[in-house]
Image 1: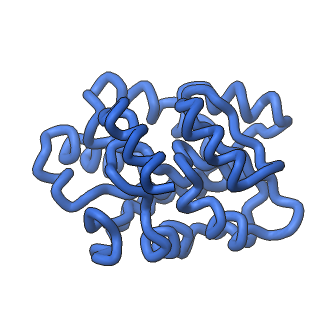
Image 2 (image 1 turned 30 degrees about the horizontal axis):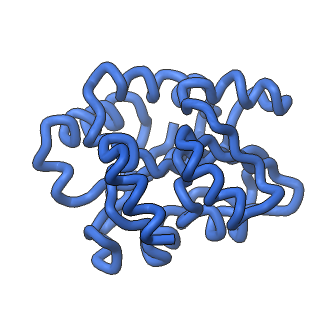
Length: 190
């Protein structure tokens, strides 16, 4: 799995954003305090090979809807092999509203995200955040992670400012040192 991840990074570093899958320690922090046990509809953006998916599915209550959006066909294939029967759409997260509508969902309770926001220019950040802000219910939760060094980049600082502007509450967790590279989680409430 790590070699497949590295190969995908080498093919498209701006889309993948990391040389290795996220750790279980980071997955635990991602799902913490997300209200997944009470959620009715949850989406995972950019699940890659599924580093967070097991923790998300374990935290969700019975009968809740989960779906993932993964743009890379190679990563989606690896995801399907690891999580057969779990819905993954090979589309852009810009299409989250259309995908949710196809599934009969008006609003999402939670979105957990593995996208490399600090690698995106401002226009792409805006294009991806817009649909998220429209589909996430009031009081809904959004979690995404960032590498500590990402805050040194203008795009990383710009993304942090966007979160603070668009969400009622933004929490930054302590650094998860048991991840390569070390990361922290933005936990946001709409």
